[in-house]
Image (cartoon, rainbow, N blue to C red; front, side):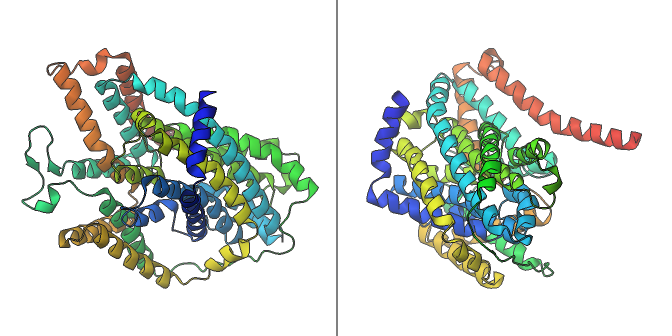
Length: 499
């Protein structure tokens, strides 16, 4: 009952006219960037961080969450119509969705995608509503050593699961942790890695790093790819609506996809890719029409899309309750909180209940907005695909530069933006994941602070990290997560040699 009461209070915040406007802007922007290949919600939130700096915190965060949900919706449109997923989580949708579009059933594919996303998003947001308070109660009992161990789990799982190589993921993480050391040491008052530059005494701005890595780096990377295969747009033919048979074949995959997406999305190493492919393989095994798979089976669109959107709500569980980002967009949402001096975690529910519950309530509203907007406006989203890439990315470069200068008018900030942009380009070029850098910069100083607090309390005894059952368990999980990818890779090589 307490969750219902908190949600009702949050609803009074969410239905305020300005917050409704922010939610609408968020879902429109999110859908638009989800449709455009290569421009995901993480990049969009990064671009908007400097511009929203002086806006209302609740409204801005509601808008960022709307972008996240909208991006998950929009990614399916490109996956279905041009076989190019807007987000990696939409890859499974492309397998059957594009085949349906080529067979003249693009309308039902888009419809089952939108309705499945609504169903999954609503159920998963209810899960967030009821699960979050229990996690908060557990997290309140954490000591500094437990929080440090939790940060270690976040570091290892994020760096090991992003990208194809755990070594590259860990390298990206250490870049972020090194950048997090720049500035004034809180305990000693000494400057670290600032090289006598006054602008670096206040630490590196997360917004500058995020905009440089995501926006500038992506624009440079796209510009460097001269020979890109031409994308053929598949027109939407016939009715957008689903037949009775389509409904009958879709509703169970929607529910099964939700059951995969929400719990896996809530795990520290979850993400959306795993549940979408699990959902696809499950639907392929359970279908009564196995001959259609590979040629345009509607279950292969309904299940993965539901899993995709359920995982988005699942990702918000560790972010809001523990302050742990488990995806690139979640890392950017964490940066959005921090630019207003807010630290997601158990204390946020106590200190800012209106903001947190207003955000959760707004997710229900955003979900309904997306369903209403996506089906009637599918023609508009398809037209966005006609925007020439040079215009699009030139606009992103201008927007990123102006936004960063407006938030921090300094030549040093502009130089750092350029350096981070080149770093982002090189990381993409050599297949290093971007998200661990941002996670390292945000969580590194927090982890350092908690470790030093734990050591101060124990008078410098490092065994304090193993004396608490919670921290010992979490460190064991972090160690397993660190070693497991290397073991699996070694076993794979051994098996290949044996074969």
